[in-house]
Length: 294
Image (tube, rainbow, N blue to C red; front, side):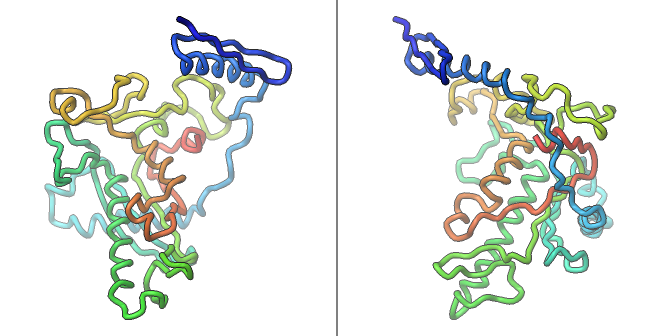
């Protein structure tokens, strides 16, 4: 049995067929979207948004993170070796002199399936920017603990990065800005370009290519990413991964995009905090503006 679904937009009809109602609806929707995309101008025709951070502040954030890393790794030859460096810096009213380094992290690998832990003692993703976000979460827990230790947790603390809300809960103070520094472009869609392209003058000429804007997954126990569509469609299971199936870990580009929508605080802290968003993302190298904005 084959199902037929008809989608009508104004006077135009689009038909879709499939072995199930869901597949038939999907086929009709694809036909309709393809027709609409032909009418609409390409999304990259619009100029890139002017959201550049002041260059001297971005340079200072990068300098603070690198100096703190060198300070911590002084006379430590073994642990000072790294490929990617990341850090979290918090500013007050955007002033350089008040910038504080909250976290400094390194890392480029993910855990293999055989080393996963049921007790949570093994981190699945040890990429530098992901570890930096975990450190920020730890900092937010510490800030909440300061309020919990007060006789009246609804009284604002001057040197705390959080402030209480009238109806309960807390939020990041409006004067605070959270900045994520990464020494290179995050893995995934934000890094899929040639570093030798002359990309500063003109936008991407092929924004609708299938290779653009894809969700990607990290390579297990290695570096680099592959499109999610190339992976098996079946859901991951614990026993399947232990038997050799690839462990799928979201790329850093996709995670940064998720943080920009859902916040950095995570699901557990979201019960106590309003979403904490990045004020800026500072990259040390391999910045392609149009790929990063996408």
